[in-house]
Amino acid sequence: MHPDTYLQLHRIRAAELQAQAAEHHLALQAKRPRDLRTRLGWTLVEVGLRLAAAPNPVPAV
Image (cartoon, rainbow, N blue to C red; front, side):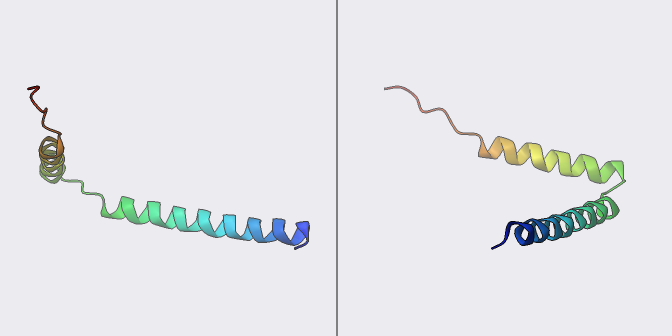
């Protein structure tokens, strides 16, 4: 493939990916919970999952 063609395709793909990332970022901002109660609830869920996933130490025998 000619280098100029490859470079042009790369620029087009990079622009597409940047547009998708911006769109995804805007969608996440629109869905982001604003309520303190919701944020606190999800924080507690995350802490609980981390505690449940923590490896248990194996006692040395």
